[in-house]
Image (cartoon, rainbow, N blue to C red; front, side, top):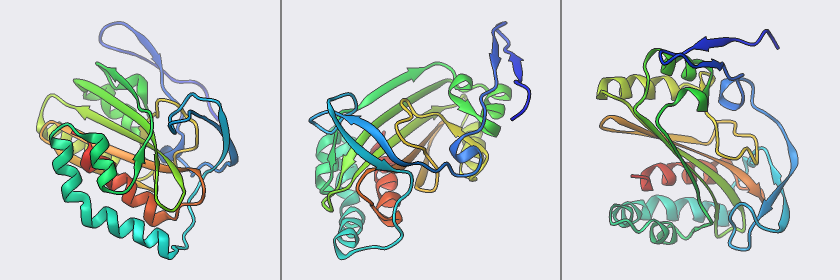
Length: 225
């Protein structure tokens, strides 16, 4: 803990620099996190389930099948996503996507922390889109996925941003709703012209292994346009 830091933006606004969490520092630990889920698996319903801060490293035969199916069908899913059929894309991976929350912003500073936030103070982005949704797999686990699309003014800036955020411990983009701690260990990113798309996955119910969480983050990045 230290003194709060403030910064004056070019437009005259004063903002407080966000404190590191998740990928910005040591991995957060929480057991039995209560999360409210809707009947469709989305955020904001009535049923309460227990979550976990980390996945299991052991991979069962069912979990291994989940990973193999994601890897073997990702090409089909990407094609469906290009056609605007995101729900179908997840179904082709034998996963069920729940209700989605989406938030857009014209700046990235107030939604980030750590070195990532410092990057945007010096190099403002043109826009930030964030998605958050639960995903169920065939093994009976539910994961929460966060996806962020950062658009820069130049492709070279996007490349520099991706290189920074890909390094664990440099900071991150805040989730829309912090229903579980996001450690950044189940993470993927891709460069798309002037945009960078990053995705993370964490357990919400059940104990999906790291392999499933990583494959889910990879799928989320690939499907997002």
